[in-house]
Image 1: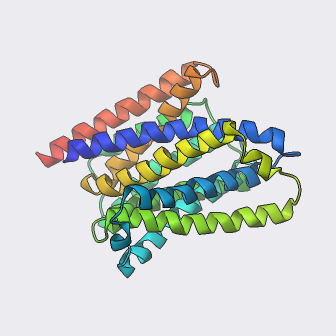
Image 2 (image 1 turned 30 degrees about the vertical axis):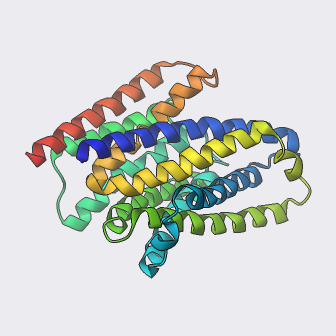
Image 3 (image 1 turned 120 degrees about the vertical axis):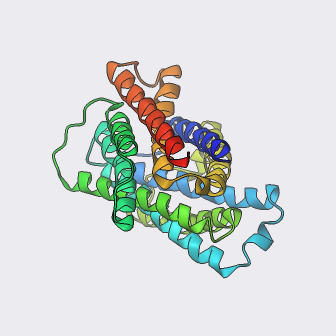
Length: 305
């Protein structure tokens, strides 16, 4: 089961790598429907619709979902996961307004290290040295895959560090919650609660910038709708279901290192579509991530033996 779980989470990182490309395509399309920089409105609209459409997909593809969500525990645990997931997205989005993508990628990648440190603190001891080395190597690789970050320690960077803490919390509580509640039910409730929260954020940003985005025109443009539908079906409905079903079979630290492969796939697909260039830092960061994953996998195997 561990091997199946590893392959499933690897597939998740590939899908989430694609979502970066889909989001970029949607944002580029949205530029012609907005005046000035309206990234907050477009991003929250995209995420709200992405999550909202996924809710309807459950009723289409998972007929048993009505039974799965009758347990009150599923809603309380789903609220916990939604809180960490949304907190990560919001802090990352707000922080990105004042820092470069390279700095954001580096600071966000700290969730791998934070996951290991939080679990070590709660257990009162560090895990194996080889696993810790794999964590540090994967953190370095994810952070430097777009080049060395230029840190200034301003508010945007601290917000992005909070984003990394929220993502670490999401990984840890996914491990806890999916062992006591229905994974499918948790996926539905966390997505539903996230949708409502995103809708509130969208309304707030729209209120501050009334009339600056042609939402009707945007929602009828296939260049926006196709990435949205792909992100909703694969990136939200499919990927989060796989996470909630299979992550519990892996150590949270091992899972966090696997998730760190996401920027490798994002950069790979961006290169194929001529969205970015092939650089030395891509080789260095990608290699560090792969080696870090290999070390952590070997460490896991030695512990299980």
